[in-house]
Structure formats: C-alpha cells, structure tokens
Length: 260
Image (cartoon, rainbow, N blue to C red; front, side):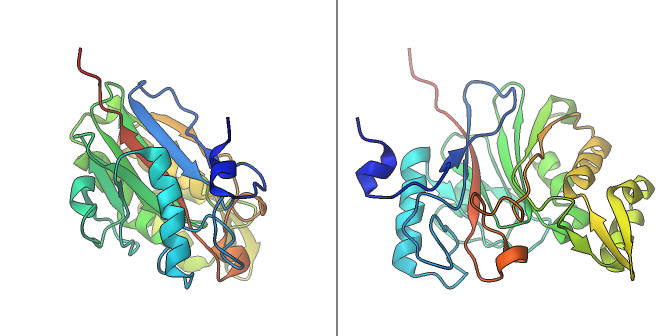
C-alpha cells in the first residue's frame, strides 16, 4: 500500500507528522505538522499552511488539503494576532476570526495553532469532552492567552491536561529587557526562566514560562516542551532563523463516537 506522500507524489525529507505525547483519552486526537511533506517551494518548502507569508496560494491550499485529509474534521484556522482571545472552533471554520485560541466540545471542528517559533499549546480534559489549541508567542503568553483558554474550556483546571508543542528553545530565544519585565511583573518566579547574557539581553525559556502560567491556573498535567524549532532545521520552520518561511500547524480534535 502506498503512503500518503507516495500517493500525492511528495518526496519525504524526514518526519511529516508528529502527535502529542500525552495520556489523553482515546477520543482526543492530535496532529502536529513539520516543514516536510508538502508542495511549497523555497523558502516555504514544503508543508507551509500559512496564507499570510507570501507563499503561492495554490500551494498553501494543497498543503492545507493534505492536513485536512489527515484530520478529517474541518480545521479552524485563526487570524492570529498575538492576543488573548479564545473562540469556538466551529465559528472559525467558515470565517477568518481574529483570535489566538479555539475551543471545541462538539466534535464538529478541529482546533488549530499555526506557528514558526511561537508556542502551540494543545489542551483536553481527562473525560475527553473538550479540546482547545492556543497560539502563545511571548506577547500572548504574557497577555493571558493560556488563562483565557483554560477558562473557555468550562471545566475544572485540575481536569485539564496540556501539551507544549514545538517552539523556539531556550538556547535560541534571545529577548530584551521588555520581555523579562513583562513576565517578572506578573510572576516573580518567572525570573528563573531567563538567563542574563549581558547588554540587557536574556535567553528565555518559553516552555518554562508556559508551565508557570498553567500551574498558576491550576493545570498540573503538562507535557511536551522538548523541541527547538530554530535548531531542528530539517524538521521545523523558524521565523527567527530564516525570516521569510512557512508555518506549521498543531491540531487537536474530538473524534466522534460511533453509534451502537
């Protein structure tokens, strides 16, 4: 039997899809794309799903079709603006909505977060009744996007688990005093996620910051946070590394239960 890539005539250059490594219920499904397995040409090679980066629209549409075929449900892509706005995923299927997080309880739409260094965070509850995806760049993370996502899920935080998808790692995420101040003012413990390197610059650990935020919200089950989009050049897009580049997407959805 041919693989998906062979059927589409795509040459594989590494892993195409990843999934969240977390103890989610069986009906919670995830898909995390890499830069591989699509049709876009340089500098967007090859599985770019971002419509706003200058890639050929037909290539992006084909790449999104590849993702759509894998997911099955309509994928709710958002117009991400580094906000703390969370919406219902079903509302974002037929209209492009300004938001940075989506929630679903219906099993009718898949929640999605597009990234190329920013942190995608996938959520579900232990009962498998609600899922969510958040786009957490440092501005959104400092501005409350994860808090608003947790609250929009409508379940107790102790029932929620989160997965930190591929983002810029602490060895590559150089930031200024403004970023340090934005987090330290809210959470004094956030200082431990920054390493001073001189000249008012720091290396920031966005994974550690996200864990702190989630812990403050009462979400104790947090997984992932092992990749670096900058350093893993063959696997991930990185805006910080390449400037003009593509976007990955991290998707989570509720699988419909078959009728008995």
